[in-house]
Amino acid sequence: MFSFFEFFAGGGMVRAGLGGDWRCLFANDFDPKKAQSYIANWGDKELHVGDVATIALHDLPKQTPNLIWGSFPCQDLSLAGAGKGLEGARSGSFWPYWRLVEQLVREGRAPGVIVLENVAGTLTSHEGKDFEAIIRAFADIDFDVGAMLVDAQHFVPQSRPRLFFVGVPRAQAPRQLSLLNEEVDRWHPANVKRAYLALPAALQKRWIWWSMPAPPTRNACFVDVIEEEPTGVKWHTKAETKRLLSMMSPVNVEKVEAAKQTGRRMAGGMYRRTRTENGKSVQRVEVRFDDVSGCLRTPAGGSSRQFLLIVEGDTVRSRLISARETARLMGLPDSYKLPENYNDAYHLTGDGVVVNVVKYLAENIIEPQIAVVTANSKKKAAKKKSAAAKAKGKKASAKKSAKKGASKPRKAKKANAAKKPKTGTRTNAPKSVRGRRKAA
Image: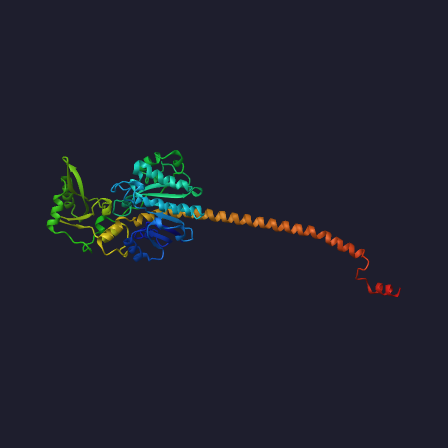
């Protein structure tokens, strides 16, 4: 069984993705509401609730984990956020977290794999300086690292591109792969390559072009996650739906009309957007009917909640997306316990990691890499044990030889003493000899 530490754990979606072959040793989140969801689904044994900056090394379990995962706050890095970068109040929590990682490495408790997850904006935040700082942080603890851009829509009906940094101890790093490899190129689009090329030469040498096979064909469509009788939200009145339609541009109205002509039930995701038209700011409603939901975003990220538009022939209905639907879009099973409050549930899922993506990374990179590290560690331990056994054997042999060499003179001395006994020395002479001595 593999083991892991998870920082910025939220509701434990990484734990859900890793599955039953993994054992959580430690989890942390500063948000009490998210912590309640974590406890409701996973219990409170491993969870430490509080700011990561307040966690000391002695607060962590003594065991060395196979994996350390950190999905640090993305608001300051996201294109939807303020763009303050790693020095922002929220993403600035990266450095207190990383100091714990550094301390573990210095203690000889380095994990086999470290994963960081964040938004694609990490590539360009602070003109690429944040990206470089993260790569340098890995290099400073003697880890090689690579970053992959994985869009969750390969696995669930939600467009959610996220950047995953995967780092391993340099001594255990895989051989460098060529970008001509299709399986490598798939996860490294142009923006990732540009970020890599902007790195100093010394950091480029620490880069790993990770490779994963093409994901399986996704069977679920957006319409498949929709609840007919949702909890916590209500279908809009005809007047409310008409108002949303009136806020659409001609291009989006055409999308709705095209959906009516398909002859099947269509589900579209809608967002309110502020657009500039003729020099003025206009609030618009934009819709997509490509069987994929828009990216779930928390209101704090600067974007509105997502609405649904369900089209069946000439019938058009609308409402807010439900909490359970957002959970399904994150790959969570319906057995997962969500907060009763709608806003709390939306924040929980909107800030999470898609379960299916975590599972795919674990199966194709994390677990195989840990297996390599474990095998190498066993070989190293066996070699060390063998060397120790040989050294012990040589020491015992030398000691035996020394003892044997020291005992020979003593035996010779005893033999001489028997031949020429000193005066007064008692010998085991035969009785006949002793008798003649007495008669004399």
